[in-house]
Length: 195
Image (tube, rainbow, N blue to C red; front, side):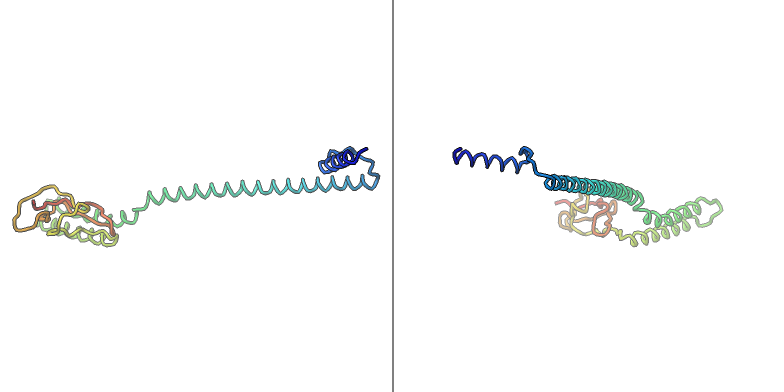
């Protein structure tokens, strides 16, 4: 046998051994025991990995379920907060509604003397109560008479000629504008001077 042929056979044998496809040789009793131990170790390692895999899968499913439950709870909280966000404001307005009802009741009595005076007084008290509620929630009326028209805060409904004031000056307010904190709640409807 030539040297190159012998080298090829040895390389083929080494490859078969490393791939585990070599024909079984008579390894003896000690080799058989070693092979059995190796197989048992591999089986144990496989079982351990399978257990770890199962545990990780269960942990993942548990965490996923917890995240889904948290999302549902948060969504319910958001819906509840949106639904009842103005409850405090609405509760504060109840006293205004009560005062308006009292004023109407007083105006409706036939035996009441000075009905107009009572009605005016009741409406003034109600307006004062409403102003307190607005102040509590930082809602304030815009003071705009004499200012220059600003389309961000005002809506022009009429223009009038007035030579004594520059063009675009607000001379009358048809409907009051309101701010809440630093945002516009409602634009003011105004009358301005023509150019």
